[in-house]
Image (cartoon, rainbow, N blue to C red; front, side, top):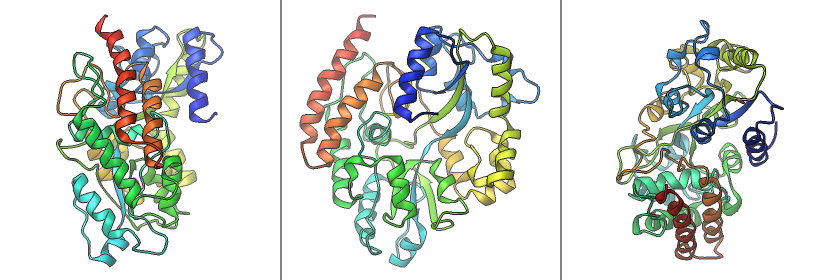
Length: 380
């Protein structure tokens, strides 16, 4: 087990070299399509999907689709799945006489953030990620770009990073977090926003739906006080992301049958029941199985279940915005180069959040970096 940035680097090195030191690794629906295309993964159709106790049909279709390679073979099984939701303090909203729409717009969210800013001592209106990184700042921000009508690339691989829609979305995000967001926002990621929410330092938070498990845990001081609604929108009907940390087997593994047996257990309904018996249903690695959402005990322990399921079902990684895309992905562009590109551009945006630069300058530099990537794909 390693921190996320470290584990990504290690897994990439291990699987690209096919060193065979590890049989299984945690891979996401971002990596698996091009890992499988490179021949780095072993298919799981026979070792896991056909396991009689696994029940592949119970896995939500969005994940089976996103973990399937271009050759039609299955290369990953989800450990858990998530979309993104807007989470808010129901008690704070009630005290202020405010109503949260079930399907809010970003304009409504900005208005509500202003109204609940300072509603309790030390409480800010909203928490949004500002920490540099393609998987930190740009996870939520890219969904904002999508629903504002922007995109990283058009269908012909022309970069659109400094286009009016991308610029408007980014400026909106930066202004919102600067005006009504958490202290130290430029270094805040998922963990920092989770801490702010549980410590009553923020009234709203837009982020991964998987946060619900921690917010509703028995030890959480805000258990039962949180409401969950769909990701805010502007030009699209929905804007939630789609993500899963999944198991993938290295093609060089000499223990593929044993690896398949482990995955069939670790992603199974029985594993979820084991976690529930030890830690409670709120802590189950959910978001991947239809049966979990139908479980009455899970529904009782996880008040976010209906919103999360709706968000996952309404997410279309092939069509997340208002225009055709050249690659699959909601909060990312499904190409190997995006990890570096997104991180590079995020650094300028994070600086703008810190008040040390402008959005326009950051996106101008980002446009140049993105077009270099796009040009590679234009020539293919």
